[in-house]
Length: 419
Figure 1 (cartoon, rainbow, N blue to C red):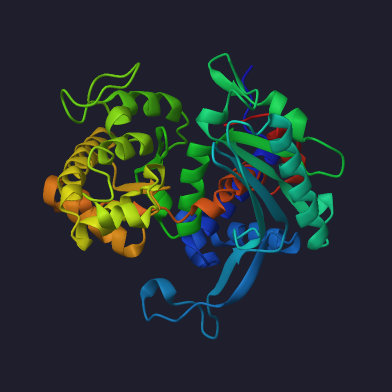
Figure 2: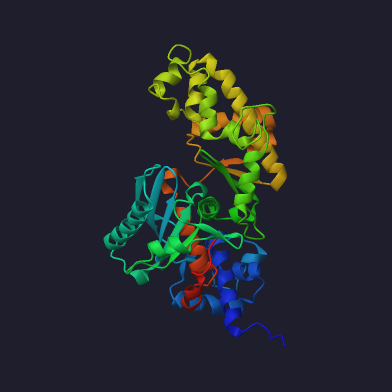
């Protein structure tokens, strides 16, 4: 016999919708919140007052008055804005990548309170990585006088290339983070949540933007020795980023182009990974032929970045110009295909290490080769390399706050699932 939804579940769903709407819309009044959720004002008042009493929400003052029908309240009354209480709890996050481990502590608004990083290479052991995350987290909690119950959790994002080293395995078609959780679950530490860092970085970027960013189709593109992408859509949570990354890297952007073992000639991986772009510029790289670029990188080709390539072209390294033109033609093909394939309103670039000037050069090339429409959709990620740990913070906030409606009872079961 089928049964209806329980009062407890209905309460959790209502609270979940309120929390997520307040976060995505920014500070919002009860009147506007009721309209967005199609819930009566009386019900919204009852729900939000209870959440204010629990410390989940806070009133931050009156809304600016606008003489519209929607803003006309009974005489003498003004709209009071609600927001997430930034200091309700605190959040720890970490990201494990092939070059660096980042750990940080932030508020519910993702304002950074503390951070630490450790270089990582092929010789860095799993034990060293786990110990750094644990010791950094304990130090940050101690420095901020926080106990375990003051912290919502520790969220850990793992880049795909590090999944094997961290003993993350596939089970029934999904990633199983059980061993990683065990390694991080020590006494006096908050609950641990784990997920794929590429997907979590896209969530963190949307969370940092607030005000409607979550209502757009986005492609989040992470540049490294591999090119990983995740898709962020407003109607559902997508987490099949591994499939998309694998297919994307095999797409051909230059027929008959460079060779890469296991990939088609001229594929994205063979043409546009960091190592591939450095190998392409190495064909002309020397003290005599590219004096500016050679001096800027002290003669080390592995230090060459897109930013420095643009600088070299501007400085008159003529031999660089043709190579950079070809590289940007390939980027234009990839970005055009991603926009068309996923109906992306934005393509977010992460780990490209571009300054504002370098990004303007990047967009100028895309505009030339792919057109204005594609170039206007490209933005830089709000998450920098040194703040990658915010990806882990976003996971904790999603699973242990928004999806539970802020309920401590629901939070206990949230740790069982991973992205």
